Amino acid sequence: MITAIVLVNADVARIPEVAQALADIDGVSEVYSVTGDCDLIVLVRVSEHEQLADVIADRINKTPGVTATQTHIAFRAYSRVDLEAAFSIGLD
Image (cartoon, rainbow, N blue to C red; front, side, top):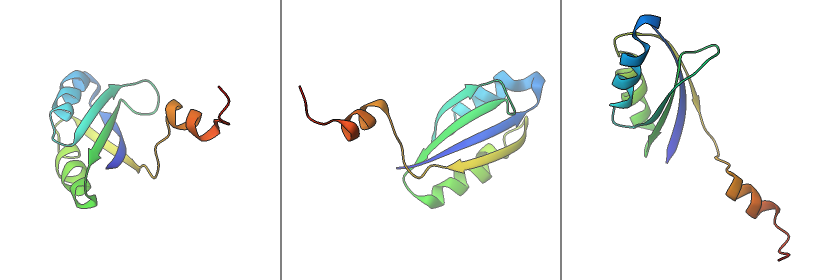
């Protein structure tokens, strides 16, 4: 599974509608409305790299109300469970 984190700037008056439109795109797993340098954070999860172009360039970037995007592709995922397993010394 390939994960991309897309930071989205949107027309401020249309953020809720843009967020819902993005959430409806196949390949988009989650959309968060956030504070900071961007308006929305979109998590994209696809099985092949070629699908990233379809989801991000052809769908997200062309969604009405999206004014700019910045995409980050994840190399590795970490979670609390993974870290606990990695640092466990086996003492129970």
